[in-house]
Length: 250
Image (tube, rainbow, N blue to C red; front, side):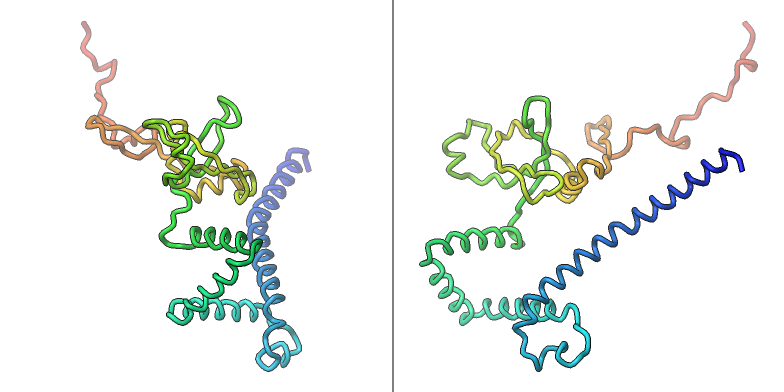
């Protein structure tokens, strides 16, 4: 067997391995995270379930996910009761009780506001992806543009016609950590990519970039999304079939 055939065979085996790894790695990591989450919730909930209602007491093996199901049912039930007058009164009483505790009061208030903003249908946590020059001129960082509500910071530092906007600059590869910055609106370069695409770009450290559709401008001045490639042959104007040999001699 020649060296060329050996090299070709090893290249194919390597390509097959990489293809299988690309398929199996995300699936394995997803299953591992889901299984770990189920086990974590079960370890918290199952000890509080009475033995007569716990299937682990009757079966020779533990039932994974039973604690998670119980937790989901209880959370839904608490939400249903809170929507009523009696449940709302109980929640208000508990919040007033927590409000009298110096340390717990600040933690509970901050967490409640964060969860209400993130999970509420009315709250738009981030509305756009943009670029700002950071940490120096000529170096651009990806940021998530938050709402432009007027705050005390705006009253102190706003310039006429160029307000300050809160932006969140996430860290790679963990977008849950980062820096909150207030940047003038003129210094933000807005992007067309979605928040999900921006998060993928950060998590993958720039390796998974969203597809870009170039915007063409017609003669009427209206933008049209499309590629900058040559038009198909059917769309090109017909060329003259006259060849050099068929031209009349002068």
